[in-house]
Amino acid sequence: MKKSNNCVCFFQRREIYAHLFKIMRISVFLFLIGITSVFADSSYSQNTRLSLHLNNGTIKQVFDEIQKQTEFIFFYKDNQVDLNQNLSISIDNVTVEHILDKVLANTNLVYKVFDRQIVVLPEKKSAEADENLETLLIQQQQKSITGKVTESSGGTLPGVSVVVKGTTNGTITDTNGNYSLSNIPANATLQFSFVGMKGQEIAVGGNT
Image 1: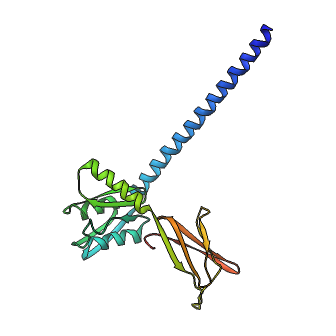
Image 2: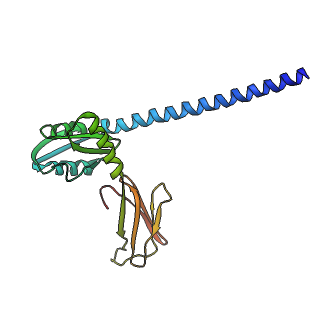
Image 3: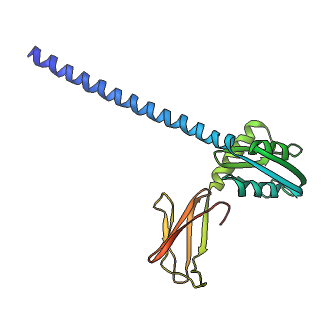
């Protein structure tokens, strides 16, 4: 009987140790993924360089040009920020942070970079600004998208599959080629497919 009990205890301990080792291995794996993600997010903004030449333009035009040249998307509330201030800038091969520091230096605006998303707000106390930045990002990260799919001749296409790439969120165009999707991330890509026609992908970006 003693020998049997000892065997049972041995196997129970081994199962416990195996379970703990599995948990530790998963934890380390998730930690490494998190670290990799942080470095990936920061490396894009650090490694992406662009040139910008604008004479007597506006801050809004600077933002538009950055979005054209990169994968960055700007978020801001029209009633909180004034982007119509005039400026001239001529700069080559610099990071987006360098440009924003220069453009917003004499304004009351601050910015914060979240991966490929840049939130712009009026300058406030640090803690309050951070809280508002993240709130604004969450509010504007997802949007509703509507549109119409047409063929090259201009005729509408019913029955076209429209899916958010990498998800199961999708719909099919109605008899007039119209479609509508909700809860779409701003950095999403829509995939359009129709039997007998070549598929197409379109980045949502700042479009609605």
